[in-house]
Amino acid sequence: MLKGILEGCILKIIAEKEVYGYELATKLHESGFSAVSEGSIYPLLIRMNKEGLIEGTLKKSSAGPNRKYYRITEKGEEELNDFIINWNELKTGVDQLLKEEKQ
Image 1 (spheres, rainbow, N blue to C red):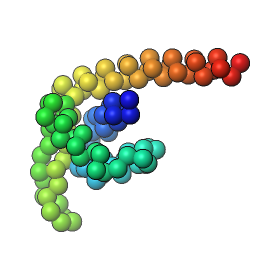
Image 2 (image 1 turned 30 degrees about the horizontal axis):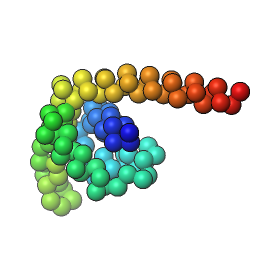
Image 3 (image 1 turned 30 degrees about the vertical axis):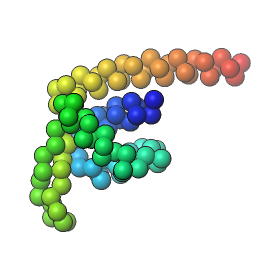
Image 4 (image 1 turned 90 degrees about the vertical axis):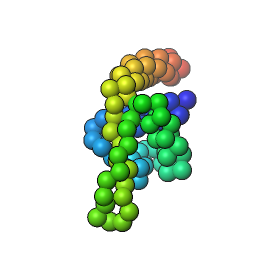
């Protein structure tokens, strides 16, 4: 389940602006995904790229080697929209169950 949620969150971050892997990992950690390691992010990026959800482009970096920046594709935007709809339905259901349990 975390994998699907992580994918949706990655799409959301990339939809806002092009990012490279380390920057993406930092944004995820700042958002509370402290248990997600960089080592688990890069395989996801590779798979998402192969699936056509994102595209990577190498760009020069002033601080070392070239970096691969990722941007969302049309297919990725559709996937993100589906994720948001599904997440809201799931969140509503879980919130309702937890609320009922407290009563």
